[in-house]
Length: 252
Image (cartoon, one colour):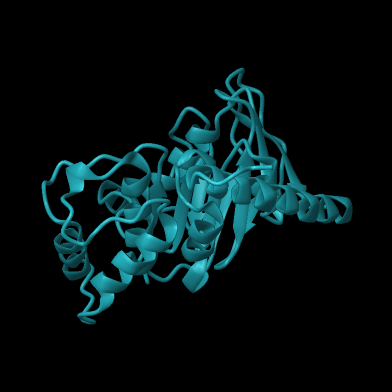
């Protein structure tokens, strides 16, 4: 994995030009930060600032530091490859390849010598997808949920990026608990933009967005830890009912 000791988010401004008032958000390997706020509040802008290593030159005016330093102009021109991976709500493929061949190509591109790596990524995708798919299925034939399951497994198993940006995984059509556990592995920093209170509370901290700015950075409280357990129980019950409905079983 591409080594990263620390990621820092420094304040900028909201859409009205008002300064953001928070201390630097410091994220170390293994940390998870939820990003919450209404639609249009600026969640995607924050993720974009991180992806492109903003240095006061984006609409938010924020600065992103990597190991205490802003990236040089030359390094920023190289793009975020190797530092940041992003899982978005929609995934589509331009290539018409069988799934396993696609994963083998990605494994080679990452310089992975283990011949089993592509197969491990494929097996991980099956754990995430509601409906499994064969290794010879061609990419354009995958459903939206299957495509996202494949890309999450690709990023988690084959990818080297130390930072993963996840946009509304609750709408991805995958096993989100398994997906987050997989993505959080190997000491990655995970930023999770979400509207779901259970997912938001799964992170020890959350950045609250509004009018394009970070309005607050909140720590999960003791009371919220109890609520997290309550919501987790409700979610587990809902998922069991969903499974039974899809299997044609009775719900009563």
